[in-house]
Length: 226
Length: 305
Image 1: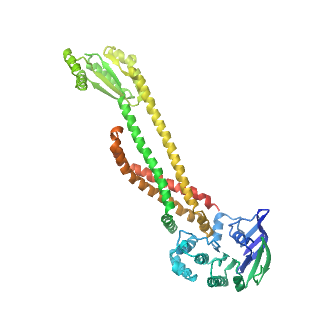
Image 2: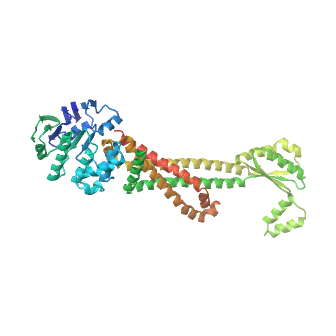
């Protein structure tokens, strides 16, 4: 589904974010990407969304070079990918309900569907009581859960989660990872970046280790080793 | 259709929830629209004053005492034919005397001298008004030409006062055209300045939303979905600013006219109220356009990824 071909991201000779990455992710996989801070994890996943462009190499999503397609096609592509980022990337002027509704409106869903699905997914991430609160009125953990709810609402083919459990307590962390695993069981590909050893060990699936922009390990049933 | 409704709703909500940023933009727009309104009112004052000046300028032809009135009226009719002539007024010798007496009402010495003479020492005269101040020269030349004088054999005309006043008339002419040009230049400069200020204020307002625009694109919203609410917000800024401006100028012109009507000769408040509809339309269109175009230009920068 995703194919990195000799991808590098070089800012200058002392600052190489990604160094000749060759990587394939197949449909339905659950891939965890681990590494130190600055290893290139976030840059890697941003490449898939075309939020970053490579200095060299190509990134393919289902045989489509994501950096060479027209704007409208990229817009449609992004609707098939759900994203969760470290900095939440929520719309601060919209309530929790409206943030998720926005993602549904972006793909053109009808009002009835929105009214039905949004409360449901908010319950799923345990934000039922914060439906009409603004991100500014929520804790880090709650914002993260809202971001996850927004990521899964349109049942995307791929979910990219960049440190989704960073601000969560152990119980919430466990629950979120369970949600991601369940989504993966239903067929959604999941790419997860994390520092959290417990998460990696509990998932027990493929682990890619990045160091200074290079892939140094790629284990089918990986354990957390840095 | 539903998309349009969603965009409009989003625009309204954004306006409401942006608080201070929205009101700052509305304030700037109100100032811009006030500048435009002031320009409209100043133009009215300028045109009125210039017309007053024009009214004061005329050519008077003084006829000899006892000149036959048919010949004077014939001259009047031929003058009326001229395209430059706006009006020709005939004042008979008797009327001239009455006007003279009225003007010198308290002046007993002059009135006594007049009674001494017993006969009317004044002749009739014609007052000619031209459509433009610049055209008086042409009319005066006409009067000098042979056609006019030969038919009346020049004997009935005592004097034509144009040539004495020529310098003043030329000066007034250049003042009028100068004032109009200056007015136009100042208008254009003020409008450009206001536009620049408004455009950049809205640009700053949208800059604040820069990251959110990125998030909306990341989630897969189309350009129109992202851009639409900002345009709606721009229109709302324009409309709210227009309503505030229109409302403000009622008391402003009222206060202004109570002090200045005598000096200016024109009642600004009356002008404003009677032309209220046209002024409102100008402002609504300006405000709406300004808001929309500013938003559109400002957001382009962030939409291109």
